[in-house]
Length: 311
Image 1 (cartoon, rainbow, N blue to C red):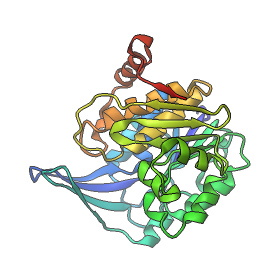
Image 2 (cartoon, rainbow, N blue to C red; image 1 turned 90 degrees about the horizontal axis):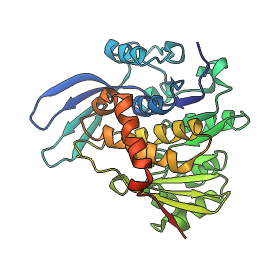
Image 3 (cartoon, helix red, strand yellow; image 1 turned 180 degrees about the horizontal axis):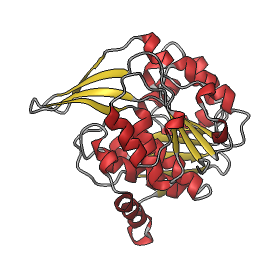
């Protein structure tokens, strides 16, 4: 097996999805590791996922991972049920989430340093996705002295009351990929250039603010460059997981293009545009790599240039 150049660390879930018409999809595969991993593998084919699974993980989820080439070696089985989430989609587009697992389940089913296979440790980059805060902290410490880049996509819910702790975690990573909500919670600002510089001063070389339908804002602390890339036009069915897909694709493309932040940002918005086209993980899991890459390459064409360097 080829050692991965990029590794996504996060959670897998078993989701019951109730659609607006009342139909139900039970035990659908979900979780940030799935969204990020499937998006990342489009841009870096050696990508692997490290995500503990429960003793009742849906077989269809494992099958789809195998079909895409992911190794089961980095899906350690815990002796407890898979994280279970119910998502009810309202006719107005709102979502109601019910979590059928405990905090102890969430902690145990978040990856630990010991879950990372030894031959993954030479990867060019690692992405720590939203998970239990203690697990995030442990991984950030463990990966800090590894040769590859470490990126963090945080969880907005653990920030209130833990701001200083989260800032300390941010200080250990090379790439920080917060949402607009997370930036506001950490800095109190919606001035993305100013807020990005404040966050970069903690330590990350790149701060990438995910702005949903507005695309993303990237600050490169090494060069002082600011870059805004708008979202690609796409019909929105469900925005769940779009940020995870963005982060996975961004980091995978950053690895594959030897640090081209424009290419990485365009990869992120391209992956997100497929994720939002269907409910749950269906959009990104069904996306053909060739189709996503074609959209990415078309967006890179100077004739279609949409990115903007900000003075």
